[in-house]
Length: 334
Image (tube, rainbow, N blue to C red; front, side):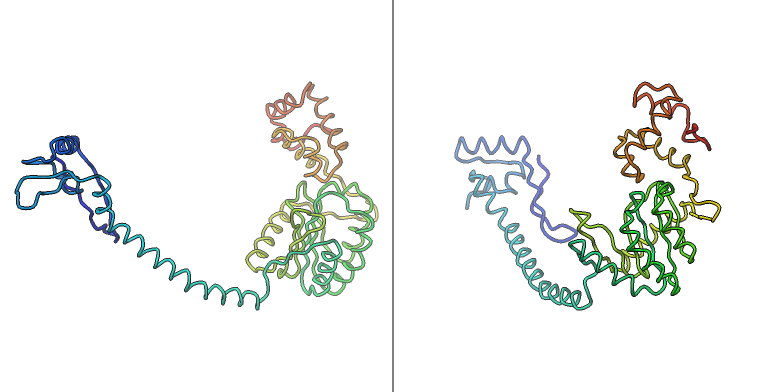
């Protein structure tokens, strides 16, 4: 016999219908269909779920019921419960819609935490205004190697004025600027006034942070003509932490009168290159990430390949990994 299972209340609320017909139950239903009725003891499942119904006034006799009729009667309470939940959901959505309107109004009144800037002129003007009111600290990360002389000429008077009125400046560049004379000349001027400059093999992204209150990051899809001004305290704090993490790993740039060009840190740069060769990056990708030209990257990699006797890019990556060159303090010479 089938275990009797009907529509029951869940412990968590609501109804649960678990219809299961055993082999004996379906056989009894088939017999009732063929004969018009069936008598005697029948499995509980076909009675519970309404496929067989007792004949009025005749104890022990059952008539078959069309499955669609039995299903409709059994599911009526489930449909009613769904309708009840749908009404509750509609009321909830309607009620919270009024609250959402109030929330959006309050957000608008307190200022938008992320502002989209379109166009180089708009970005430049927004940056200038933010930097001009900087009172304590200006953090800048500039990937991509040496900067253009025009941009450096525009930035120098502004940055000198900032540092002279006591605004702390920390700037991150990539190692490749150590061979870029215009950028070095700029660094020499600002560091002489008290600014700090360090370099790193890779910088995750361009960012400018003023007084830990607003951060400017690239926008999408046109990165050169789109930017975002982020004022959300949590987002700005996160960007500051990322910057500080990079700063701790970076190396200071110090230019003395006797040393007009600091060391290029060629071992560090080559180490980064070789890591990317092992992971399968192309010269163009490596150049973009290290802020160097593809020609320079190709020249460095060729020197390493010649020393190791590599005949292909795949073999070079294998030899670098096999000889554990990236684990050594000094890589092969330039």
